[in-house]
Image 1 (cartoon, helix red, strand yellow):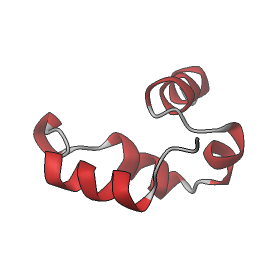
Image 2 (cartoon, helix red, strand yellow):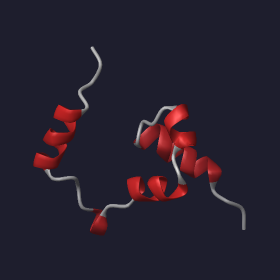
Image 3 (tube, helix red, strand yellow):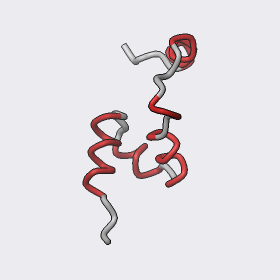
Image 4 (tube, one colour):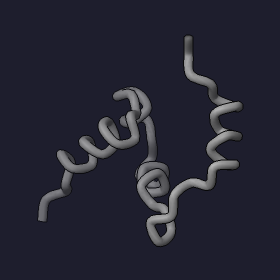
Length: 59
């Protein structure tokens, strides 16, 4: 069985919108954690607002 690099990169770059630098610098555990949400649960709005405040988009 081959490792699914194409699917992993498509999700990392497309869905998670990671830069190549961040994708390749991430550990396997970090990538797995980014993909995993218990029971497919979405991030609660309050948690998202906190992240947006801590890490605002560049202007």
